[in-house]
Amino acid sequence: MAINWFKYAAPSTFYGLAGKLVPWFAWPAAILFCVGMYIGFFVAPTDAVQSEAYRIIFIHVPASILSMMIYLIMAGYAALGLIFNTRLSSMMATALAPTGALLAFISLWTGSLWGKPMWGAWWVWDARLTSELILLFLYLGFIALQSSIEDPRRADRAGALLAIVGSVNVPIIYFSVKWWNTLHQGSTVKMSGTSMHIAMQQAMFTMFAAMWLYAIAIALLRVRSIILERERNTQWVTELAEMQQ
Amino acid sequence: MNWLEFFAMKGYAWYIWGSYGIAILMIAVEIILVIHKRKITLQQLRLIRDADKED
Image (cartoon, rainbow over all chains, first blue to last red):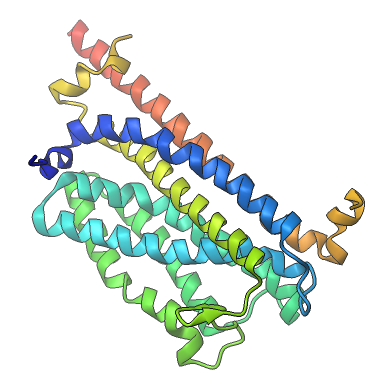
């Protein structure tokens, strides 16, 4: 059976598909979030060094990793839109930016609240922290730039250039703890294994999965509004069931 | 386990609940904003369509 992958590259077909997919991502996200919180607070043991303070890890690490991954996905979509002139990819990039910014903010916020009791400072101009702050500014810059340009296609192109150039920051964040002598600790979970307690790992991975699913659900929901706005002059939008009121 | 003791988090309550509280609050705000945006967009499109019909 041949699947026409390009069928869903059209905003009109993707609009319906996205609407059907949202609950399939949103509900598992909510359930996994509750499971992750339960394991994180009731199953995972107290840390020998950091006592209870380490429990911030279950939100801090998934939010930080996702803020970087979403940036790369956003830049990838923006690049696709720029190269192939596909409208939907540019819309996806626009839909991902606010969620990426939110996750970058959560990463910095929880990191600050973790840094104070462990390092004695809310903030230090350390390579890891500074590059993550730049990531937040890149997201905000992308959003501001796009909303300052009235013509959506031009906004897509300008935003895409910013997103692509800014993606150089993501490996800098990732490798910052190796390249520079930073206050921020290195990765605990490595390819070669981890020293983490099994329940701590389970809580962190469950929260990571929950936030992944959430990010997909919210981006799909947001892109539906973007599609409607940009396609408002088309026949298919006026024929939508939700428009018949 | 005692609930008061649980919420006290051995003295780290402000840091831990401050982290989770703000994170959950912001995610909740994002969900509300995105749902609201959809309602507003549909409303605007209907208004534009009705205005066009009257012309």
